[in-house]
Length: 170
Image 1 (tube, rainbow, N blue to C red):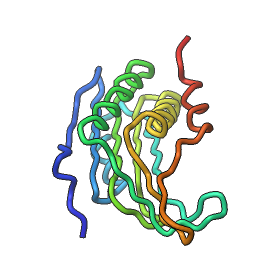
Image 2: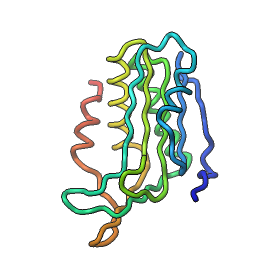
Image 3: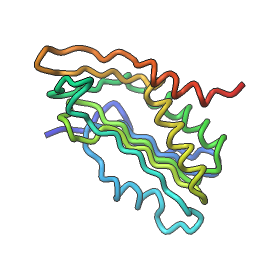
Image 4: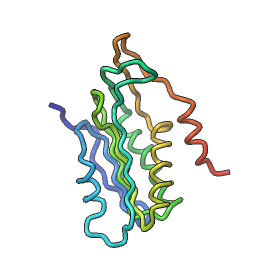
């Protein structure tokens, strides 16, 4: 049985004209429930884009037995909020939910959820992609993989930095 990360409060922070929810937790999330919470009975939302990251069972043909995610409490939430603020300033969003889990995960288990809501799909798609690119490169989370060959910390990938770099303003 997992318990919530006690040092990380659940926060709903108003950003711009949209509501931003950021949570770091050990417990699983229900995607449909989170979409219902985000949209409520609002009629100003015409599109919700969801991205859910799931623990893979292999990496470069090597079987993964488990993945452990750790974070820097307080700093992780601030970094995520900073990028959520940027997303809401770049796109006309009506709501954002970002949930990132920490702890030990088996292949197939949920790790991260990003929801973006807008009147139109293009803004919601772009904002969700922007947020995931930055979560992969800037949020202070660390991954440790367990496999038949041993356990080790996962290094950053150049492909993630390249994906995030396309969002840099000149």
